[in-house]
Image (cartoon, rainbow, N blue to C red; front, side, top):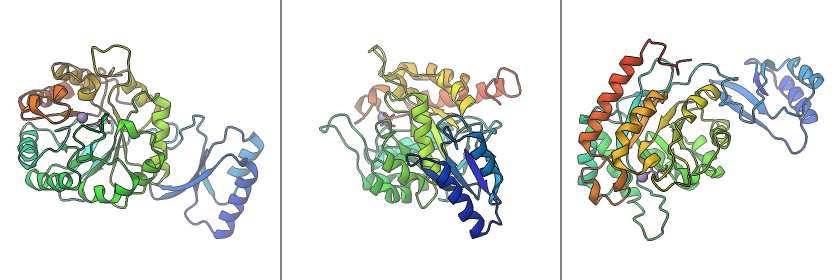
Length: 357
Ligand code: PEP
Ligand code: MN
């Protein structure tokens, strides 16, 4: 249940509502108070609340509107907000603003190296990304690596280089943050905070990005073997913490077949568009692990209705310090950007663009 509070509410009216809610919700259930579109809302799991209690809540003076959402995730649900969310990126850092999501917005391409390796590699790639027509630069400064012996990223130095790349190209920047205590530092440099697959259910981290003081959007990657519902509940943590600007990223899930690094679950794209108003980005790089599959799966992602792609690009993929096998060249990126634009034009205004709600 999502209760929107009247804007002119008195403290007595609010207290009365809170008293009623504490009576009708059991001790195991929590109510969360947050602000959505500048309105105070109270969210609670109402699965155990009977019709009589529901009516009593609706009749409270403090209440403007009550929306009942049956799923466990509430704020990210389409039942709460029917229209697709559009998320503005890079409007506060002096970079070129970009909009992600919404039914009338063309898909965006985010591209860059898996890891920031050095100044020359990043700046060369950033210029190539810009020249190819991609709109956002990616680059990992803090890398969550499976083995402790692998390159872990340049850390703060990597963030400084990303800032320099943004100044040089005007492209907004996305980079991963791995721990709650680093959120504010990373947010000083980034335009979008990335939560990696391995951290999708790191709840203190989700809370921290939900509270980041710059109000930067968050791209939440799907966990290595997360269900869609677990993923949406992870997104709900960020929104409930006060940040509605969440972008979901499908990056493939664990499968039994070693032909690809992961199994890119493109069916999740139309499913998500049915369940949530949040934008959905597809990552064919991690989703396949193989450079030669990336152009085809990029087209497939756009055809499935993705609001954009995130692609790993390297000027010399075979010598990349991280994920070289799945990194495309700047030339390949250029043709993917072109194909994305063509596909968008083909689908625009036609019934084939089935994802437009
Ligand atoms: C990455 O984007 O480089 C990355 C580590 O991705 P994931 O969390 O999806 O593995
Ligand atoms: Mn990578």
